Image (cartoon, rainbow, N blue to C red; front, side, top):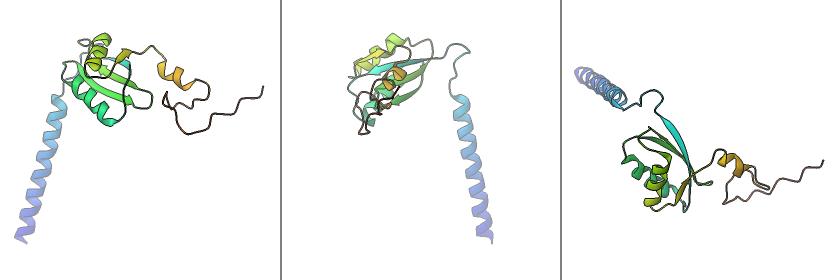
Length: 137
């Protein structure tokens, strides 16, 4: 009985310690001042796999002001959340320096690619789905 009590006490303390650690890590994460966060969409070339995206993210995280990144490998679009310390042009330079030529994408780039004839939103590399049938009208 004493062993079960000791194990329960140790497990409870370990759980509480873990919860406190997570709380402090989250609470200590830098948050941008209101109005200073922005998002930049980059059109990136030479992306072939998840390792490419990880390399880019690792390089961007070395810079103060990088908050997060979302990507779409099929379209080559990367959305970077950042503070005003990183300009869209600087982000493109950093990604290009990492070996992946990048340029700031114009507004609606993803929508424009998805709207091209025969495209179902899979991006420039395409997919194996048949093109939609022409509308009769």
